[in-house]
Image 1 (cartoon, rainbow, N blue to C red):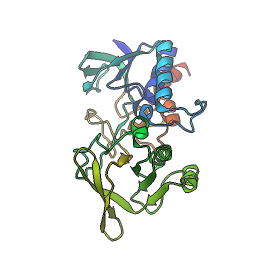
Image 2 (image 1 turned 180 degrees about the vertical axis):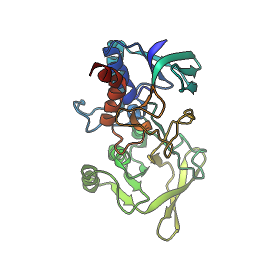
Image 3 (image 1 turned 90 degrees about the horizontal axis):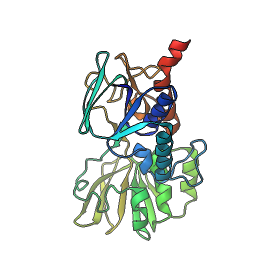
Image 4 (image 1 turned 135 degrees about the vertical axis):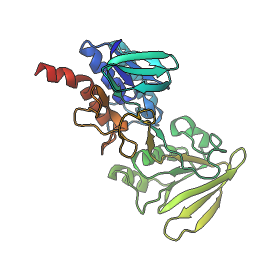
Length: 302
């Protein structure tokens, strides 16, 4: 029996684990993939306090993992298949065994959203739905398309532009939804163009992307672009990983909490991108995890 079970080893989960063990709690973090979550797969980490120069998602995640293990946080790599949240004892069933605790912190974030367009599944990994940090260099001297206009998408576009012959940002709104810093960098880049009020409609090819269709939001017209060997990188938001949490009432798929990270079920907390919130950043995820791990002891003390 653990004191606290934590599902997810992203910034929120790792923060929760570190703060839990610092308070003398026996904490277990369950992670189905790698420490870091989505942030561990990005090209660069920006705007977080005290990051290294040219910090990558991989280096950031590696230091998170090192710090957690050094602090005494136990991490088990397992796929969670079922949870029981009601009652005094919380139970998590995984492919590596069943674990129990008096408290549980749900911090398993979200999954990058698919576009659901023709050709997306068939060409996945063949030029469609690529990862900037992993695949960017493979598109040196080639045309690249980035789908999305929020901070995360534009940040990856700026990284990819260093490799690309030309980079096109496809975004469904009339203007980019990113911060001013990124808009200025896009404007200053010599090889980035914008296709605003547009959506990627379909992709075609066999062993690589041969052509793509772009739909225009205002008039519904569809333009076909022949571009053999191009790379398409999709950053269309995330879907919260809440499908197992049927005991909780969700809001648009996200878990409602109060400022203490408490859900509607006693002893169940949610932290990071999985909960209802306005700002989803590494900084706020780390804060959520710390609060979820510490709040009960703080209340008992004071």
